[in-house]
Image 1 (cartoon, rainbow, N blue to C red):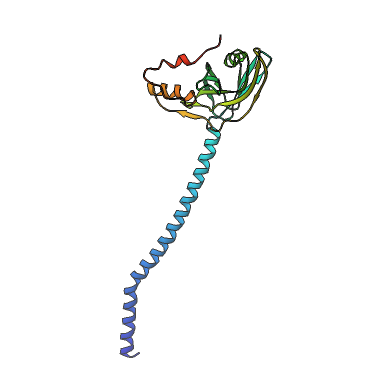
Image 2 (cartoon, rainbow, N blue to C red):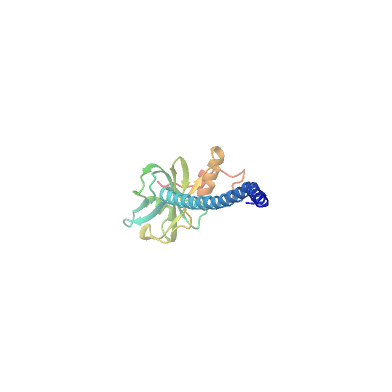
Length: 222
């Protein structure tokens, strides 16, 4: 091999050795982009899986109560509360009112546990008649306040259509389902008490400083 050919080969090899780091850098960048896109796809799939798992968990364990008023006889009716969720709750306050009234007419304090999937019932005929009086035809609503997982919740108003004549219950049938599920009452101390009173009163007008205590608005049955 002639000397010029050997010198030309040496120049080509040295040039190739010089470009090797550049080629390695380009290949590394390409692999980095591919791995980054794969990581992003994996993160998106993981987020979707977590969102579905969270949604399923909330659907199964978020407290959800169903309230039904049922006629037993002409002078007696029953309130049936069903726990549709898996978590157990502690019933605290049952309220009854006519839709024409801004605040509950009857309330019954409770301290009864209700296991998930079970039903609680109690006869409330006298309280319902005290709310409707001797003659009434129209909707009556019931709401329940309860504890679950250390927090206080309140259901929306479950409506029923009732017909009362001469103090006798002729019909009592469920009418419409509530539009909202249970809501958390989060405030503490005096602020929590004010929120509790105002919230269960069906979003009544704000209390003024010179108003009398809220107990005056509730009439308990005999």
